[in-house]
Amino acid sequence: MSAAEVAVRADAALGEGPTWDAEAQRLVWVDILGSRVHTYAPASGRRTVMTTEQHVGAAKPRAGGGLVVNLRDGVGLYGPPGSGEAFRWLHREPVPGRRANDAAVAPDGSLWFGTMRYDEAPRGGTLSRITPDGAVRTVLDDVAVSNGTGWSPDGRLMYYIDSPTRRIDVFDVDADGLPYDRRQLAAVEDGFPDGLTVDAEGCVWVALWDGGAVHRYAPDGTLDRVIVLPVRRPTACAFGGPGLTDLYITTARTGLDAPHPLSGSVLVVPGAGKGLAQAPFAY
Image (cartoon, rainbow, N blue to C red):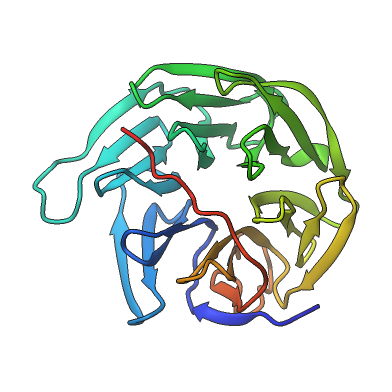
């Protein structure tokens, strides 16, 4: 299956983290190495770009407006446009040689944010959670490249990717929202699993870095759909649009000697499936 179109033509070094902002009816995504947060409203074509003071691994909508951002040295908050609310740190934990990477908001409104070393050293990264009351807890402290995180439609399963393992893992989730009983859902042979999203049927869509494709896995781990892309390094995917039926895919050009002209752009597969509404960060 190959039906990708261009949503946003761009030259992002490391486009990542597409997220549908239902309140504003727009896509939010980042260029990690460009230190930029982008938005795109499909209905109007309007685009915005905001520069951050550090490399930005992810940006997610906040309840009531504004954004929470996963930056090199920690997690920070921006207020709604025009609010006059200045940027402030919510959690600051600088570690030399380490930066932020992917993040996701759980059904309970907590933020799960990942880190990794710039050199991608094993055990150099973490996965942590900030609950709506601002409490921070490191859940995994032995990952290399913390990437895709998502939850099943009923919130009882959590999916997670540490890219160098070439695995998509699944956990059960306890009453406090914490994962346990980690096991493999699926293994990837072509490329490295990167960002993921879960659809309304409980299937897991995964972008394959150096694999030039997005895969969809059934809840039992069976590969049941492949979207072949013109670019070598898709990074993450998310459903968006009024009915959450369009699959948006971010891409990267970093590290490529001869990147495809669309590398760094945002692609879209209209009518790819039916996504799940994503909760905003409840802080």
